[in-house]
Length: 302
Image (cartoon, rainbow, N blue to C red):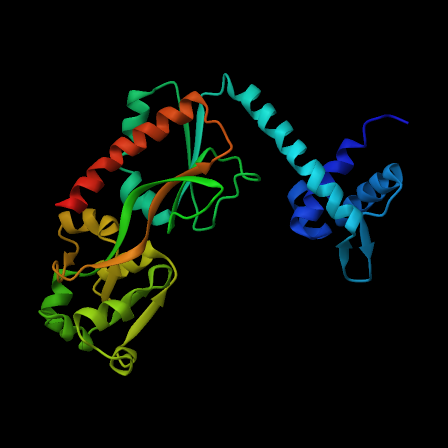
């Protein structure tokens, strides 16, 4: 018998125990659940122990399975890291993922500057509201909107979150929005990803829960769509000023009450795993993005 366990079976086992599902492991590895089961049975035969108990609708790791996983997962991660470092020596690409609204409203008009400064780099930008899994997804860096707290990540603040009210000039004039309390007769465009209306109205318009609940509102699950709805005179959106700045400059939106800005406990952070060494091109992009973001820090401190 070889001293090496069946390596394909190790992949199937690691994915199954990490995801707690043969089906999810099959989806991740692009095989059938039956193939996952066969690989794990092959590993069990090689080890001479049962790694999972199986019932009609459920599989559950045994004590031996949990102990084995705890020993092999760090080793498998070392293999992945060593392989990525070796492949990355000549890799001129940078892969970054960021929230769609941040990508469209702030990053898109700046990314060409990086390629001008570093023309040999291949930049791949993805947009997603889902949290990036650095162990699974082929991503070097990510921008995440959260509180910055994660023991596994290096997190550098790009922009502290704020919430402010915006609408089109025509909508303000038609409804007559001159004071925060006037929003009682407006339609509130509620971006459910950044739901700060209740706190904003309570603080700046002195409204109670019943008064806030009586105001017409539309719930929208995409920040860019909520902002576009405000541009098209559908109501008032509460948004991060960073995401509305270009539309304000172009006269499509106005900041209704510049003195009434709510500070929120979230922000846009540049993140990457603490235990992963960044390749040269990735470091260049990280430093470039942080330099671009310095203008945001200066603007917030004015």
